[in-house]
Length: 292
Length: 244
Image (tube, rainbow over all chains, first blue to last red; front, side):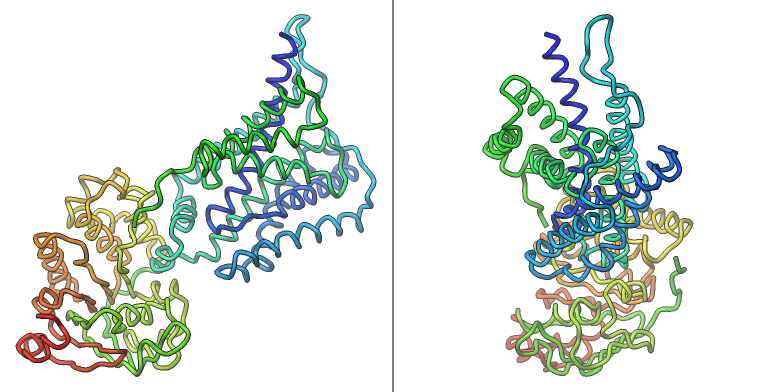
């Protein structure tokens, strides 16, 4: 029974990380039909920024904030310089470019910081919480992770729904041709979308790296599972990203706990296959094609 | 955000050559349209009518020629810049964003060209002029009928207070009663706002009914250009190019 609760809560905790990565992917996919293979690499890179700041100043929260800020900047710069030229061309172009970006970022991190595993601090205690003598399997830091991702996702939803900027983002994502006809500068909107994706990736990075340790490839498997979560949720749906992330985290936690941890990525593949068999475009995608 | 230009503008297209790669769809087309007029653009499918509107609004880059709005050449600029210069293009198929509400569709029409006060004023005007939209303002645009959607996209185009209005087949797929309503609306817009309207229509009879001038495209060239009444009265032309 204790194991059951531990696996469940622990799964939600890691699921929030997958959700954050999934959200970044959805943000970019919705607007541009580009799958950002470098999302994990971007998150790793901004976590190195946090690590640099923290090791020089000893101030965790300064590092946290600067990581998020550098996520915004990195996303915007990458969109404007490297990704923009792929808009409107064959989808293969953006695939090649984003994979190339991933290799570049990981290589650059290796050159600047070296390949060794570094430890990265957590915001709060990582000791498991107990209810009486009953171990819950999550720590205050896990709680912080869940709250941080949920708060960010909620803030994003509010921006989308109630602000002019959010309206521009949605209009461009749904129909960029009509948006241009109405005078919307979709270039700037796309840059903003990438900046926000960079922000969410950076958030995922600083939240998960305490447990993975920091090295150039540290976000690779997190990215794979975040991508899986995004597909499960339906690549077009921010809600699906969060639900898909938590769902995947919980299922993998139980599977890994009861069936052994070696095959976690295989379990992920099984979940993906099962969901896509039942709902081929993901759990929260709109089943009807867009009617004109 | 710039305030919309309140002067209406004449539209002149000079010797446009444009296409989609391969041979040109428009092969030297020239048009002149004054403020407060409706110019009907007619011709068979594939004659180049839609391409003409796209060349004006910037979705197709003309290979040669000029597009003059109020004397400024807008050819080869980006579509969003041309829209901000006062050219509103309501495309074929309407372009309603079905995932947004009626009100959100209207609001995006004003995002690029008007400040917050202007946007609120434009929305109020739109609801006053189009009560059918006011009644459905919070509904998803997907729930609107074909005729309501056509009104929505015209209202959306007007939110930017444009100087030139390009309409591509507004009667497509509409019941005859709705067609008459839409045509009436277009006529009102010309009378009240002094807009320069270019109206592409398969339904030549309805279009010539409200237009001041008309031109007929065939295979990318202008084969006839005259007052609407004269075109409608020319039986040979009508049968040959216009189908009635």
